[in-house]
Amino acid sequence: MKLIRDYGSLDKIVEAMKTGDLSKKYTLPADWPYEDARLLFTDPDVRDAEDPECDFKWENPDVEGLVDFLVKDKGFSEDRVRAGALRLTKSLKTSQQSRLEGFFQVKEKTADEKASLKRKNEEKVEAVKKQKKEAAKTKKVAKAKPRGTN
Image (cartoon, rainbow, N blue to C red; front, side):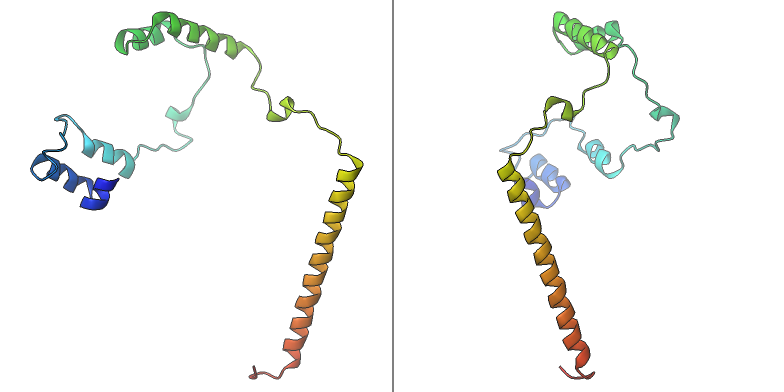
């Protein structure tokens, strides 16, 4: 962030890293696709919700495909991947996620709490009435003045 503030743009930072004063402090990876990364922000691949590619369905996971990708390509532990896929498969068979309200029980308010809430509500109602009365009074005074006078 500091470099962007100092240099003004990513292109100027890259140029300074290649040839300028930043070349001694920072090394720029040869295969760093910063132009492609910029395109993700300036021209994102966004599809309409009605697009056929946006028709998703929850199905059982392809366990062997997961193992092949995560273990062979990315170096994950095969036992952990298979255990995670098993948990995922089990969770698909259960009902949907519980609502947040299901974790809490409604606790009855005490008489003091009820009285306090009632008093606060009455105070709010009185304050609103007072504001309306003041507004009506101000409006009445403004109407009583002849036009063009302050």
